[in-house]
Image 1: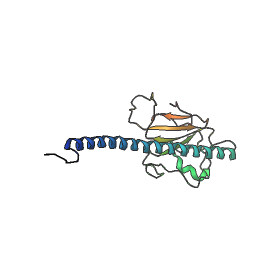
Image 2 (image 1 turned 60 degrees about the vertical axis):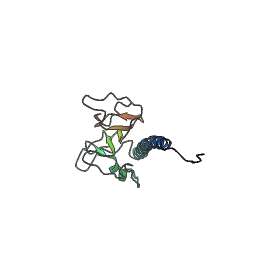
Image 3 (image 1 turned 90 degrees about the vertical axis):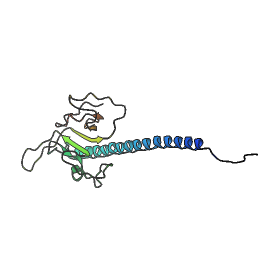
Image 4 (image 1 turned 120 degrees about the horizontal axis):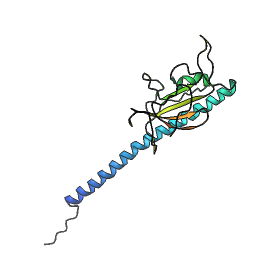
Length: 179
């Protein structure tokens, strides 16, 4: 008797399903990483937009940048002063608000208040964004800082840019150690 049944055996089906599952897992992991990378790229592009606006502001204000007003200053508050009509928002949560002291973008200069209504502009600044990933960067951060602490991408008024630690002192607008 001749057996002319055509089809797949159970083992062939299980093996092909396992291969498809493994490939799907790799695709999902890579898809999530590409989302993180694209959001971080958008943050860096936003910082460059702020930097160009800050330089334009300084050109129109005798070479000084906006004052910092606070120990930290969410960069989104600069939009009115800098003439940015469409203020960048963090690409992950599509907001430019802060949760306590945690903002998407930060700005600090060495300018400070001199009187009730008058502020002295700064001669240097840092503008930074919290990033989700720091590709191929080895940090030498302050004692007590862990790998899970937030990291920043920083652009300084002297046009240096790179990654910085969470506990880096930004309060004077001085460019920190960049990685």
